[in-house]
Amino acid sequence: MNMQESTPGRAAYTLWQMVLYMLRLGTLGFGGPVALVGYMHRDLVEERKWISEADYKEGLALAQIAPGPLAAQLGIYMGYVHYRILGATLAGLAFVLPSFLMVVALGWAYVRYGGLSWMQAVFYGVGAGVIAIIAISARKLTIKSVGKDKLLWAIYLLLVGVTVVTESEVAWLFIASGTLVWLLRAPPKWLGKGSMPAIALAQAPSMPAVSAGFDLSLLTQIGIFFAKAGAFVFGSGLAIVPFLYGGVVTEHHWLNDKQFVDAVAVAMITPGPVVITVGFIGYLIAGLPGASVAALATFIPCYLFTVLPAPYFKKYGKLPGVLAFVDGITAAAVGAITGSVIVIARRSIVDLPTLAIALVAIVLLWKFKKMQEPVIVAAAAAAGLVIYPLLHH
Image 1 (cartoon, rainbow, N blue to C red):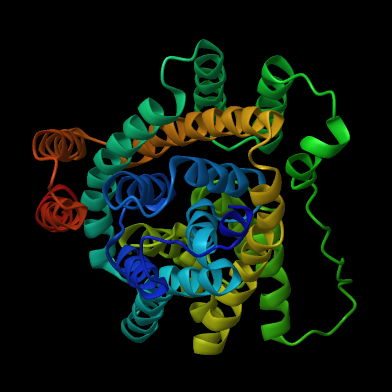
Image 2: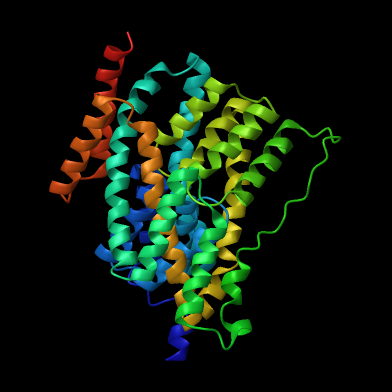
């Protein structure tokens, strides 16, 4: 029996089935990290039963306490569960590649045709439609992760409030939530052995500082800057936006304000992880080499932060202290995800037409459980293309 437990085999699916799933999710998964995390739960845990609820929770907790983009890390962990390093690598690549190719194509069109005015119209509609998708995802995750547990509800509501007020994800609160549940539910007799692996994950290695005196080539500068972005930004893809703005626009003057806003819009209207906007930004700075370096530099740290601690999570994950810690972090994570729905809604729902698009989309998703999200996104984009020019002429 022990042999069976220690081998990652015994999966109900092949590695290529997982890779194809991640390719499809990366190609059609709209709605940013909140929605993508919800799709993985729905598809892999509930419908296909490839991944257990416990493994999913472990992956979500690890993705939340390690810096880097949430959905990409969870995707890497889903590949790791049964197929270890090879699975993690292929799942991560399959998840990120489709949206990377899309943003590079959009970057080429943007540079060639000077700005993308139609993008504002599309984003006007899509931004509102996406709210419906992420609201429904957040509701499902809340029911599944928090249930009727009063302690977890208190943590969840606190994180919703903090996220809405600060408009950012406060990383230390995730650790504090996990620690609180652990201390209350499984007071440690064996503190050193049981929960240290989970706590230790919070300690991100520091990047070497680069002195301004070096005359670094542009690609090296891009690599160093985006590696820092991947290594130091916690939470959902949107959390990386303020960091990118500070470096790309304010410090390095690689892009102007309008180009940067367009880059964020590109991330929103393309499927896959929001963080893939780094590919578009890299393309605007230095063409295809810039896009490739920016994307690799951003995703390599998040890959390492997932794969290196994963064996410890697997080994110690069944101890009562770690289970309690994971429960606390998961409640905090889902609270932050729900709070971010409200933050994004405030930015996307700007008038009556956008409110109408969001409400119609919510009703459709609620009534027709099998409706595919890309249908909603396409309809919202079409509505934006029609309505936006009428309002802004």
